Length: 364
Image (cartoon, rainbow, N blue to C red; front, top):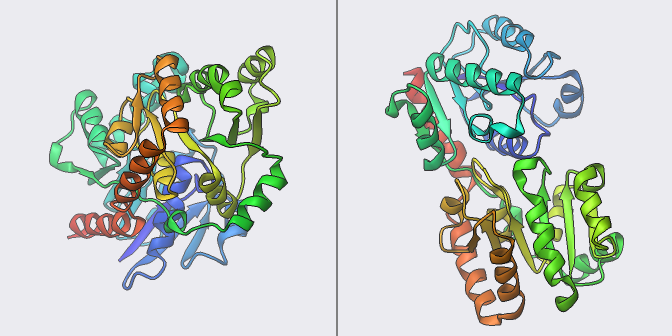
């Protein structure tokens, strides 16, 4: 089976995590040959670590050019199947195709996107739903979202939950935690937020809740991922409310340090208004750290009863949850135990296996 995979978003946050883990899980699959499509810089950094042919394509993301450039190259490679891990499915592919649609946020939270962005997303998702042989979504919530907006046969949509990297389950030593804390100047227990700072991530609610508790609990707030200090609106709030000494901005850190960041935290919070999945909740639970997530979209499905949920518009409810998790030892123990059990239900191996099943169904 010869599969073409668009990996141009390999280093993006959520979709990048999906691509990285799916591709890595495919490396030792018998009878599977992968052809990767990505930019020149990806080819130079990944060609030695990925088995298979690498085809360069530097088409701008979200452009008309990418739709035809990749399909032209894919059509010349005698592929059995093409998999787009994002909603931009190339046009005029001559082989069966599968698309993974993680969310339809452009159509749900319209105020955060321009008319051009919303129009492009709608047209491309509609095309992908029509032209693909199968559609993969991350959750039952994602399936309901597609069915509510687009005309698509329900049996064409395959729900395949994402996974959590096994490394998060592996214990970090106290020595490693101390080295990490010293490196980044972390001197107190801390709340962790990881990921992007796009408007729908609703980070302002987390900052407002933190403002109410940080003095009483002698606690810090740590950000990893997209740099907080590049976001003028959020950093203005931090400065205006005299939180700068209590808020640390680590930026993007590597996988081993991210694992340490999780396991060194007191609690992990995901206040997002909209998620197709919600990686940080699973990563927190696998790390043995209590998870607090917004009662919204797929987050409730992923967290289930293994974490605490709050109204994403209610900073007071988040504040209450933080107070409970930081002071109630019995609650913390219960959440940690439930979290391990919940995270154990999600693996990249299962995700890859189910994805391969869809490949085989489509090719047959």
